[in-house]
Image 1 (cartoon, rainbow over the protein chains, first blue to last red):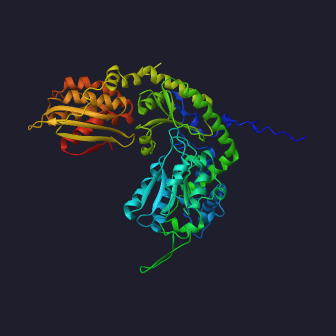
Image 2: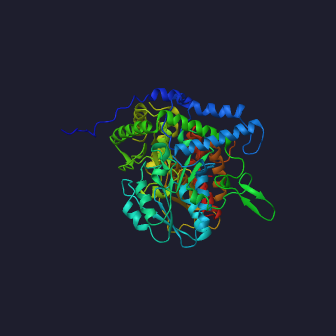
Image 3: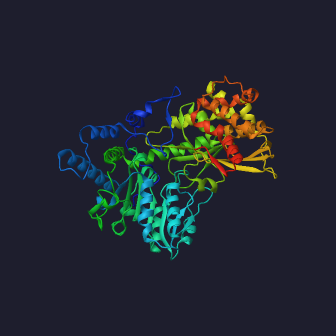
Length: 418
Length: 155
């Protein structure tokens, strides 16, 4: 007799204690307009756990000096902390070495770095592929590159539900395609793109792949060895860490070939007025004093997220998403934009013909914080024939009660606009 | 229950102008036009003017997309500026802008009392600093059109 395994049986995990998590985030006990804060804008920037705030305070109070410079105790300590953070980031992404991790000032900084340094390897007529749902940070740097060198930008489409159209993407690949730069998770639609399939097709064409992981690393996590992409870009502040630090992971064979982005201290090997030589990656790409304390904060954020468990956070967000899609879709006049089959905890919507800014202002008076506008993705707004949407996005600390609070607050919009 | 600040912001007059904007059209004979762009939200309004040789506004109209506040403001503005000179309108905008930011002392008699009384319905934005730009977008665009510029932003 064979064993019957029921794969539909949900995997039981120990209870996810969202209330305990919430107690770790000081901002979540704030009141706004006399109402408890209902923070549904984590996709723009997440709130910070006490552990991150404390780690940064400690770093400023007792471990602070510039890095890679001093031979004195404090500088060595700060350098160790900074490089340990790099190692932690490498481990978090399952990179093969910390040398593959470049710290930047933001995800935007990382895109600009690649567009400049990798971009300098490109020639007029070369093509790169982005998708229609990219954030401006993964559009404008390539346009600047296009203006400098005459490359062409091709745009991979999505369907009306927001699914990435892999077959259409494949058709765009050609002999001149030198880079694919697409998002892992859409910051507007929540769409999770078929990253492995994208890599397989692009590599089959001999084309390297960059993923915008600003949302992806938060909601899905990443294993860059398993994924086998070439660049992965993300930012600290959406992963419950500080602002002011971004991450570029790159395969060594690319980073080593790429010339510097910014020039300055710390990235040089030897400087004379005649000729300057540069250090190996990642130092080559980190000119000037880096985000020292931010790196410490990011390391603390990674520790926190890891302790809670990325998979458990993802499961919690998935449950919330399913609930929100039901709860909100049941509301009269509410239209959800983005119903991809693979979707993270981000819900964009229109509410009747009320403008997103009016929605956001009215529900703010009930303490509910959502993002309203184009979400730095104007081409995507145009794709859906809107200028703006309201967007609720979830984090590990979001509760069902908060989704309900959003729905109740939206009734107030109806009350005013009729 | 709706808070007083919200009721102030979304008064009936505003909701009415927002839903049924006046002068929402593109006049074929416009002599001046400019796009008002709010880069933060992506809202865009184009304001059209027809001026006579003495820089008086014979006709004012607009088209575009925006929130209730920006559409209502454009609607009221285009109604109000017809028949006025650009110089008058400029002064009126100054007073209106101050009203929106809460800087208006209201004490100077400059002949715009009736207009300002009507515009008072927009003054609820002062409790919502992020929305002042919505109320002034059309006015910025009209200024740009009058100055012969193609576009104005709220930045």
